[in-house]
Length: 263
Ligand SMILES: [Fe+2]
Image (cartoon, rainbow, N blue to C red; front, side, top):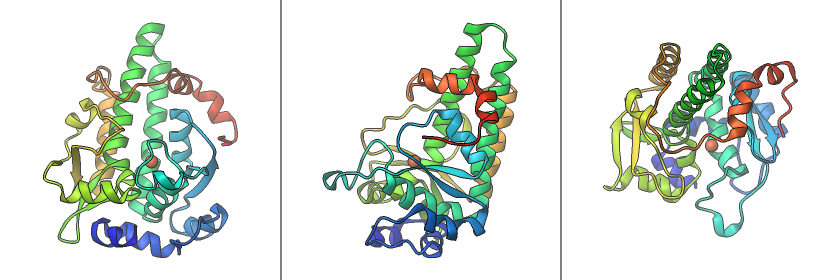
C-alpha cells in the first residue's frame, strides 16, 4: 500500500502512519498501537470480533474508543472485502485517530448518536418512533460512509483521500482519485443524507471537504438538522437499517450504564 498512500493519502494520515510506527511486514498488536496512539488524542483501538450494533459503535467513538476488528482477510481478498477486518481498521482508520480535529469529529459524531436516541425516546407512538429513528440512523450512516469511510479532502495542492474504505484498498484508492468515471463533488449535507450507496463495487460518487475543521462543522450541522427534524424522512434506499441497530438506539440507557465491552 505504501506507494499508493504516498501518492493519494492526505498528509495527516501519512503523519499518523509514521507516528504509530506501523510496519508493512506484520500484523501489529493493538496494545502496542494504543501505547503510541493514546498520547495524541486519547483514542484507543478496542478489539472486537464481529458485528457491533450502530449505537454501541457510535457510543464507543464518543468515549474515544474505536471498535477494531481482529479478524484478517484471506490472501485472495487483499484489495477488497465488504466487511471490516484488521487491515481495514488498523491501516485504514487508526492512523487518522492521531489527528486532534479528526478525533474530535468522531467524538462529536458519537454525541449525535446520543441526540438521536434522546429524540427517539421522546416520541410516544411506537411506529412513528421506529420510522423516524430508522430515517435518522440512515442519514447518520450515509454521512459516515461519505466522509469517514470514503471522504476526499483538499490537501497537498490537490485532492487526497482521508476515508478509510479508500485508504485500505489500493485499487479503489487509485480509482477514486484518478478515474474519470468518478464524480467528485464539494460536500453538501443535503445531498449526502439523501444519497444511497452500494458497498459491492467501487464508488462512483465521492464528496470533498476543505479541511477537518470543515468536517467538524458538518457534524455540528448534522446534529442541528436532527434536532430540527430534517433527518426524519430521508430518501429511501441503502443502507438498510437492521433491527439490531434500531434496538441498540432504543436500549441506549442499558449501553450507557454498562462498561464498554463490545464483542
Ligand atoms: Fe470502516
